[in-house]
Amino acid sequence: MGNRAVITTEDHRVGTYIHWNGGRDSVEAFLEYCRLHGYRKPEDDDYGWARLCQVICNFIGADGCSVGIDTFDRLDTDNGDNGTYVIKDWKIISREFFDGEEQCEYELIDFLFEIDDSMPGRHSMGHPMIEDLLRTGRTLNDLGCDYFYSIWKGRGKKLSKFETGEEYRKGKTTINVISRSSEKILAEYNGGTYDLDVFHWKDGRESVTIETPDSIICVPSAPSDDD
Image 1 (cartoon, rainbow, N blue to C red):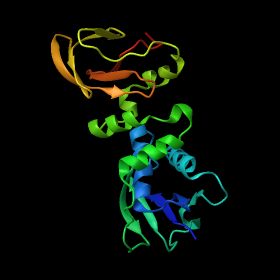
Image 2: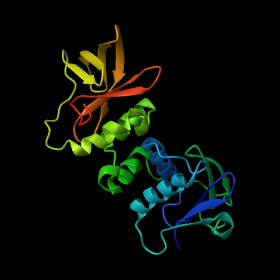
Image 3: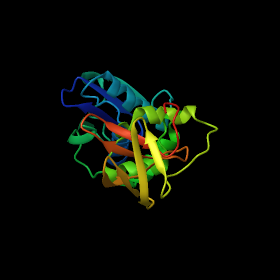
């Protein structure tokens, strides 16, 4: 026995089978974690399937009957538990082989924290970052991958946070912090004044993002190796 489910996309070519944690609240959390991380989507390419399976396997474990991947016709789609989830854009868009009551035992954010705790080393986001991404509607990719990876090369540096009256630079962009709260800073740059969301990284640093016509610039509260 188990809490089985199959996850597939609209073309029904490939899918992944999970023996445990197949309830809707669990599956929605797995999908949302992948979305927050900015992973490619399974309907786009095989990297999406790989990352989804990686996240689920890290959480469930790697015993002989935890997770499988195969062509859709070879999977246990009518499994007697949760049937099949059809997904798109990291959301469940329809169900097959299921007409029961949806499982609703876990709070989304608590389950996201548990998934993040199961991720190895550099691949976890940290609980504060998950809260920030949910609050702002951003994904980790939106914040600048160069800074994400630089925090692992900057160990031993003095950690800092945005402070009122200080200037911070990323490349040619400089911001002056006028005031701040735990979630936002009021900053001057490029001749204007802007409210910017603060993102909290697991190494203790903070960052804000500045959108330009050409790109999104991530300004950290302490120097990265690229500065």
